[in-house]
Amino acid sequence: MQLHTARLCLDCQEVHEAGACPVCGSESFAFITRWIPAPERRLTARAERAPNDVDTYRQLLAADGASPKTHQWLKRGAVVAAAVTVAGWLFRPAPKKAPMARGPANATPPREPERQS
Image 1 (cartoon, one colour):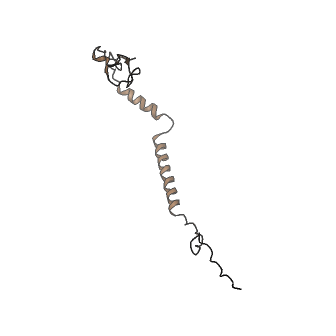
Image 2: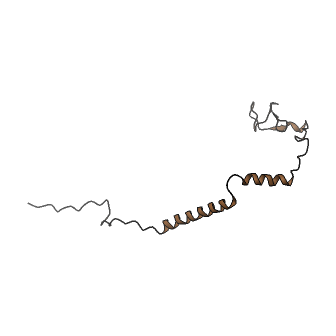
Image 3: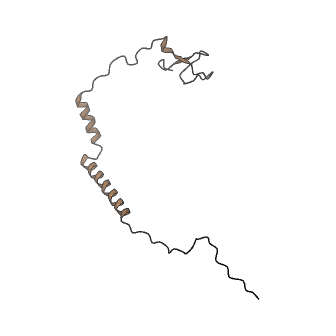
């Protein structure tokens, strides 16, 4: 457990790092660093990177096999494919409709008059 994240439960005095005490379930706590000062994690400052390191990283990232022109052609190809797809949807012929039946679909057929004998 890191001292920076250690918490002391104010109800049961359990040391934990969860949002609520695992023993009593209380959410009232105080950070241990309130009483015990924690030293800074990084004792020495980070070294500054030389500008040529940045150029080296850029060259490594660009050397993955695809040049910037290849990426440009791929993007253009994707845009053209999308445009052709949309044009195909817009200019497709309308589907043929079935002839409309007269009257409602669930209507019962008319009854024949009863014969009188």
